[in-house]
Amino acid sequence: MNFADKLKKLRKMNSMTQEEVAQRLGLSRSTIAGYESGIKGRQPSREGLAAFAKLYGVTLDYLVNDEIINIDISPCSSLSKDEERLLNDYRNLSLAARELVREQICTLEKYNIKYKEQQLP
Image (cartoon, rainbow, N blue to C red; front, top):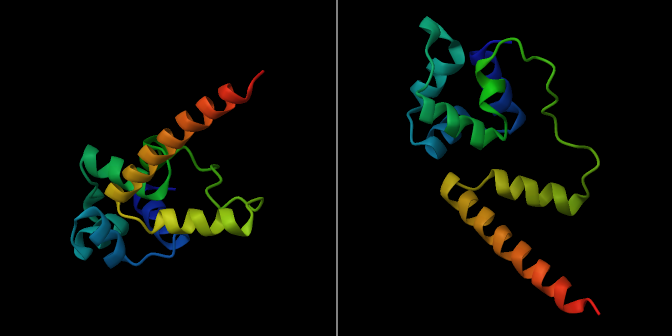
């Protein structure tokens, strides 16, 4: 699967419009459409590729390498309803907000480790 097809597939799997993707990445809708159409081999910069990978939760290798076609990017069916809701909420956040969530998770993990250490006899 080529880059353009992957972008379109990932956008649809995340139930997003080209306009929504454009807003999240600070691009125009026509730029997103150009990437998805594959006209003239159009691709974003390295920073743009990284932003797409982060937005869709895939690796850069997956986006740019045509050989990698057997990666399962469908949602995990073993998620609870609460986990699915949290994942969907996370996917709807801006890139900046996602970074804040990651920072909060790191803080909570540190707190959890300290809490567990205090509970040990």
